[in-house]
Image: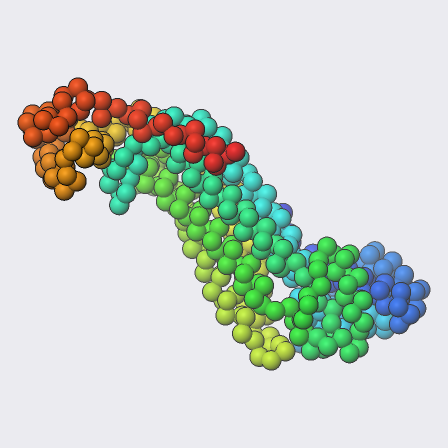
Length: 433
C-alpha cells in the first residue's frame, strides 16, 4: 500500500492499532465464554475486559518484544499481560495463534467488503444518473473498434450499471464467504477448548463458526474473496477503457473533467489526457495480480503451514485499499464526465449511412431476395461508400437491382435513426426496474 492510492477509512482497518484491538476482543470474548463454562474465574474475565479495554496498546513495544521472541501473537499477549496483571494467565486458554490471526483477518476482510460495497453503490448511483441523462442521446455502437449500428449513450452506461450490480452481488457473496470464526485450538480438534467458546466469539464478532478449521480457516474462502475483488477490478478497467477510447482526439465523444488550472503535459500546453481512467486501469491490474497468490494459498500442508501468512500480510491491505481507491475514483469520473452529444451525432454520420446496412439487407430478404444475393448487393455498395464514392443510400437508389425490390421511398425509411432506439425503455426497465 502507498498513501497516494489509499483512503483513510479503508487504511484504518489494516493499521496495527486496529489489528491489536481486534486481537484483544477475540481473547476477551473467549475469556467470557470460558468463564461461563467455569473454566476460568468470572472475575478474571471481567478483569481482562476492563484492563484490556482501557489499555492503549503500544505498537513499538509489541514490535520490540516480537524481535526477541520471534512470534507476533506471543509478543501481543506479553504486552497485554502488562495491563491485565496476574489474571493474564487465563488469557488464550486452549487457543492457538491461528485462532486469533484468522478470526481477526475475517473481521478485517468483512469490514473491508462493507466499504467496497458502499463504493460500488456510489458508482452505481453515478452511472444511473448519467444513464438517464443520456437515455436517448444517439451514439454509434462499435464492434472491433469499427462503427457498427446506432445505440444511445444511456444504453452504454446502463450496461455498465448492470455489470456493477453484478459486482455488488459478488462482493456480498465474498463478504459472506469470508465471515467465519475459528477458535478450535491446535490442529482444530477442540481438544483444549470447548466448541461453545468458538460459537460465542463468532456471535459477538458477527461471524459464523468455521465447520472444520484444521487450525486455520481453509484458504479457499480467501481465494474466492480476492478473486471477487479481481473481477470487480476488471469491470472497472472495462469502464475506464471505454472512457479512454471515447476521449481520443479523433473520437472525442466524452472526456474526463478538466479543472481550471489543471495541466496535462509538462511539454505540450494543449494536452488534456485521460489520466484518471488510465490510473484506474493500472490499479485494476494490481488488484487482479493479488488474486493469483490467494489461489496458490489454498494448498497448504496438512492441518496448516504458514506459507500463506506472508502473502496475506501483503494482499489483504493492498487489494482492498487499492480497489477502494479505484472504485471511488471511477465514481468521480462518471459523475463529472463531460459528454458531447453533438460530436456523437457527427460521428454517426461519418460513414454516410453504412450503419444502416443491416436494415437494408433484412428488407431485401423480406421482399423475396435470397440472403446471399441481398448481402452481395448491400456489401457491394457499402464498399463503394468506404472508398469515398458516395453515401450508401444514394448508391442503393441508383442500383436497379436494388430498387426493383425496394423503391426509393422505402429505402429512405430504412435510414431512420429512431428505428434503433425503439427498445431503449425495455432495456432500461430490465436494468433499473
